[in-house]
Image 1 (cartoon, rainbow, N blue to C red):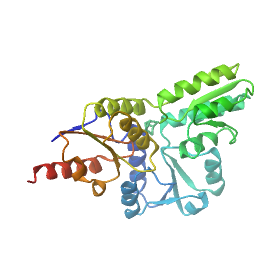
Image 2 (image 1 turned 60 degrees about the vertical axis):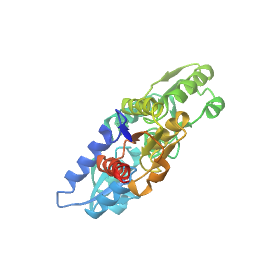
Image 3 (image 1 turned 90 degrees about the horizontal axis):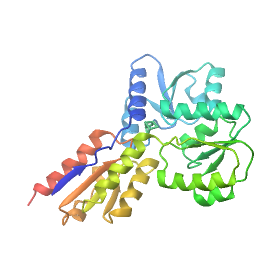
Image 4 (image 1 turned 60 degrees about the horizontal axis):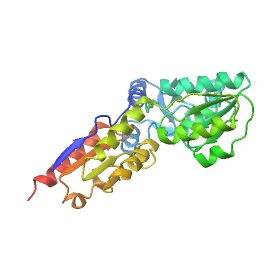
Length: 280
Ligand code: F3S
């Protein structure tokens, strides 16, 4: 059995940075809280919990400590509330997401309507919307785009992990419906690189394993992309989920992982595959 890991997979810059910032903050005296789970990966969140770092949903739950803003970012109101309450904040928002928030805030203050292409429930989108007074129109599909009305000059941004092919089609629809639209393709390069590498690998293997949290939007998208070209695609979270007997007749297995999947989780899965292959 040959195992090949996609050229771009696993932790992205923003996630790695947020974890480093949080771990460093935890070396100090203060209790550390993260606004929501730091990343969409249960193993990492459990590990952080064991070291005393707690995820909270409300700002006031961090009253006695330091609040970390995760890589997805947070609405402006969270920062304002923390400041009002005198809670120390460490902002670990990914710099690429921060740029989107600033763009949206700037255009909103100039009177532009804001469109965010992405999933309205995703924390990154919720966060960005919070920088334009929660007044953005969220478009997640071509059907959504077909319902958008022209509200005058409009600024459009995209969730960093959105699928480029769908974004392109949405943009076409919106450009036909809105007279003045300033569109920024804010899909993160790490996302497109990961998606292209996964697609390329999935085309060449007998089975594809996609590793990452079930709530991780970028991992779910990787699994969808791989499943489109490789019917034996399995989205798993840890080596516990790996059913090796499904892979018995496979000569070549491809592996990719979402942006919030640490290397040690990937390594454990490779190890299990190698062990199964070596056993008679
Ligand atoms: Fe940032 Fe891109 Fe990762 S936006 S959090 S580096 S996927």
